[in-house]
Length: 145
Image (cartoon, rainbow, N blue to C red; front, side, top):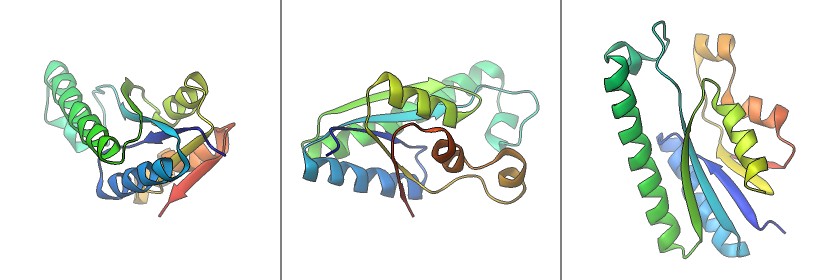
C-alpha cells in the first residue's frame, strides 16, 4: 500500500477539502505526507489579478505569507489526524512541474490532489495543473472532485 503521499494545495476551498481527505486517507493507511504549495513568480504581464496589485517585493512577501498560512493549516490538520507531515513551498512558473518533481525527490508513492484548476480562457490557454500532473507523473495520482 502507499507509504508516503504528496499533497499539493493552493489553499482554495476544493484544494483544502482534498487536503483534509488526503490526510484522513494517510491516517487510515498509516502513511506519512508531504504537503506542497507552489507560488508562481512575479510576472510583469499576468493573468493573475494578485500580481497586478503589487510591486515585485510586495508580491514575494504576500505570496510567502499566504503559502506559510496554507502550510500551517495543513500541519494542523495532519497533527489532529496524527499523521507525520512535512510541509514545503516552492516557486515555479508551472506548479505541475514542481509537483511531479517533489513527488520524485521525496520518494512519494501517491500524489493526492483536488481537481480544481484554471477555468475558462486560462484553462484553454494554459491547461489545468491537475491534467498536467496526470500526464507527467510517474506515480499514481488520486484526484478528489
